[in-house]
Length: 231
Image (cartoon, rainbow, N blue to C red; front, top):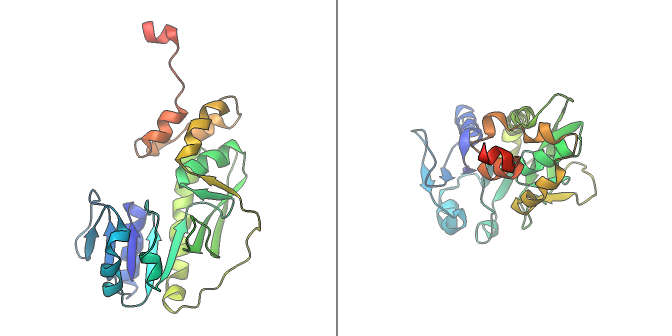
């Protein structure tokens, strides 16, 4: 199987697959990724440019997209492989970048959230939903807590569905018919208008993720006042 993505969530899945006896044929990451030894690696800025390598390496027709910042396009989507993405968010309600989706979920005072396993199609987070791991959001939970719980839910989905993916026995589950919302970088500029929202402090408390998401942290930062600038 092929893995595409980055970060600790990706490598936890890679190790889990290998420890379960599955073949890790290739792991596609960005050039800046820190990679553990023992796995075949392709360091590429655009994974779509190495479709031929992916096709040649894949031994079981399975591709996992995990914490993957790239949008998969042709020719990767034209290879006929089964491509699965694990999204840190409920679909279709919160499509897009997980960090921006979680921020808006807290601003929307959501009481539940989820990670979603879905097929990859030509849209962004629009493929058939295959499994969902839901969890509650308590009134005390901040961005950090929701993100961490979501990451754990993502790995739970991977482990629960790994063998089913290899055996091609995953089937779609019912999901809301609503198209939901898309939370990409364009939504960052509207965050300043939510500073009066009761959930803003929780949404803006990125905790350990502050340095990982500098654009989001900057969009959520309270501007310095004239007095503070000259003090």
